[in-house]
Length: 295
Image (cartoon, rainbow, N blue to C red; front, side):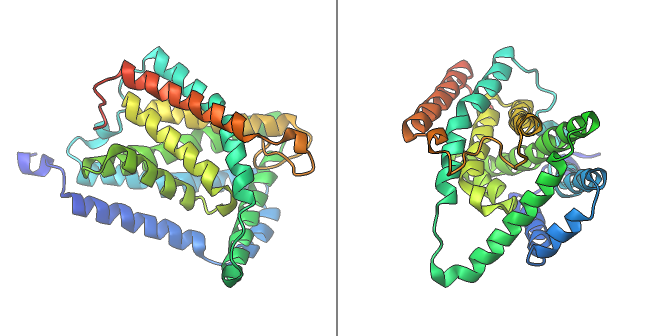
């Protein structure tokens, strides 16, 4: 292979590929009003739904990263930094970020659920609610499987595979490409987080998922290791799966507080403390790694 073929393709070509694939994802997700999805989900077994989730993660998130790395990047798969040595303190930082962020994420979920959409956008609101209900229904059906095989399978599919595939796509490919385009790193992290949350098509959880995506982006940025954001993403998802398994009710976010239990609501002061603790972890990582490898 000569030197010319080893050069990375122009950034415009890389962005054309990435945005083209995003358009495909949005197009597939937007088909129908979502009501049929709930009916189909009710007729499927948990095993079939897990197989479908594995197929979708591989097709939608993993395969485009493989194609992108092979066709557009000179460094091939090394751009994902999966071979980088993990410092033990990075691993601990990922754990701290996940647990420190829980009050903030729950508080944002409460705020997000109370957002009122103008009457002029009533039809869009109905579509959003239908899509949200359909996605929640499928997740609830999976979490309702409380067998040993069920909980292990859910952790492998809903936590491990989801974390690995989504971090490859959003942080490993998209955030990296934004930074390579000379966009400010913080702007790149938040743009990626916004797209990450929007792609899930669960609009009433948009803000907490966006913030969580930004936290994952900063973990990747300050450590230069994609494994750290994968670990944090896995811990977050696995925590919800585990709590759903041990809780009496099955719901998408077991930490979500019920309006009927005002004493269980997250206060703004607790959310602020949560944010400060997470920022403290990032300050520690920045000082630990002054030469940020993602710049």
